[in-house]
Image (cartoon, rainbow, N blue to C red; front, side):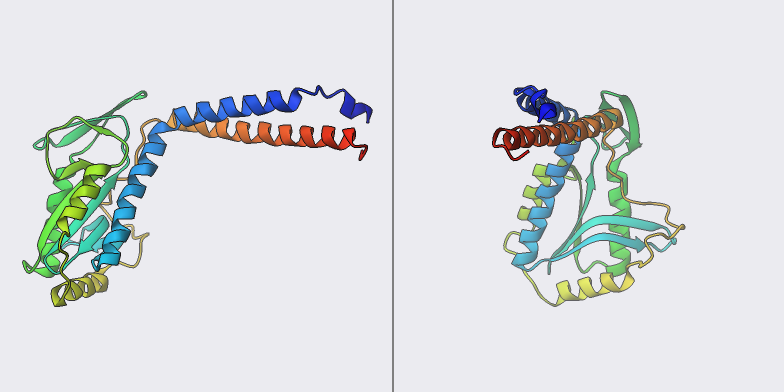
Amino acid sequence: MDVIQIIPAAAPVILGVLSVILLTSSTWFARPWLAGVIGKARIERELNLLRKKGATVLNNLLLADNKGEVIHIDHLIITNAQIFAISTLGYSGEILGSVRGATWIQETRQGSHRFPNPARHHEAIRNLLHGILGERLKVRTVSAFTAGRLQGDATDEVVSARECARAMHAAVEGLTTGTRQQWAGNIIRNVLLKNNGNTAITNRAFVSRQGNEKYLKAAQYMMTGSALLMLLAIIMAGLRLAANHGVI
């Protein structure tokens, strides 16, 4: 009882306020990561809608080209008229680049980082799919930046997550299903590589890169601290309430 009495009555409130401040600060530091999550969710929501409309949707594909190199495709939408290949890129910050350039630049609070021109990856995907299926279906490729702000050349192949969702919807407007769609889906499923740990993979998908690793780590520490402070506040409030009612 004496121990409970030395706990200031305002302690739970103070700890709760500090917890909220830490949580708010962590959200600010984690903005790039949150933007990437929201953008990816937007694309996945559209994929689910297209699947319900009758499109064949395949995710996280590993396919080998005629040179033995392995190419990763994040999402593949197949209709009776065309195939829509989507790569999702989690680069945050300002994205600068030219359609003709070999590399693009990502600028974040931690500096600049160069990465391969997404359009170069599109050509490899188109060649791969045409090599597997021939020319019976039109192939369209898109890279969607789920977190970054695009400042590069205007193109319908490198877009934001929002623009990608619109393009996916427009691409399957008046969706048609039929034997070519079923045939293409079956062929691709049959040639998928089963071993994701294959060391021969030389051309993987563009992995999500926030470029703000220090800020994201700070956000994680703040979120953990916020949770601990809130838990402590709840425990203190519970003890004082129990003491006031004579339970302890």
